[in-house]
Each structure stands twice: as structure tokens, then as C-alpha cells.
Image (cartoon, rainbow, N blue to C red):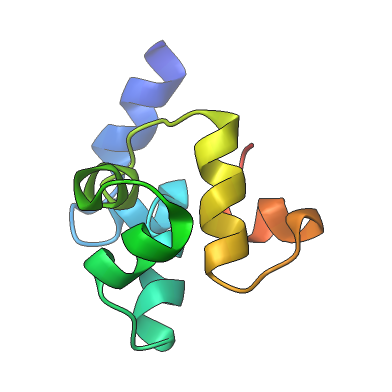
Length: 85
């Protein structure tokens, strides 16, 4: 826990999310010119769920699977989209 706090303290707020790898879903979605609502519809989850995931909150493995497929990736690409999973 202390190591995480030290890491967070050293990081600049503007790139903190990138260092933690939390916004990969958002970056891919935006590259595909896809709205949160569209991704949510394709994945079969709520737009609120997409919003929470893009903000770095955890989700179930099944939800990750749905998002990976909705973005057009293979399940073997999981680590590219959800680093640290």
C-alpha cells in the first residue's frame, strides 16, 4: 500500500491514468469514433458501466470479455486493453 501511495504522489495528475493503464478502453473507443452509448450497446452493458471502466474502476471478467469483443478485438488481446489483468 505504501508503494502505491508513493507512486501516486510522484505522478503528475494529467498522466496518472496513462501510467496506470486505465484509459485503454477510452482510447480505443475514441480511435474507432465510437460513442460510449454505442460501445455499451454492442457490449450489452450500460453506458454507466462503460463510463466507470474508463475511469479506472474494476469490472467483472465477463464484462471485460464483452467489451473486448465489442471493440473488435480477440480475447487473446485482453492484456492490450486491460493491462494488469
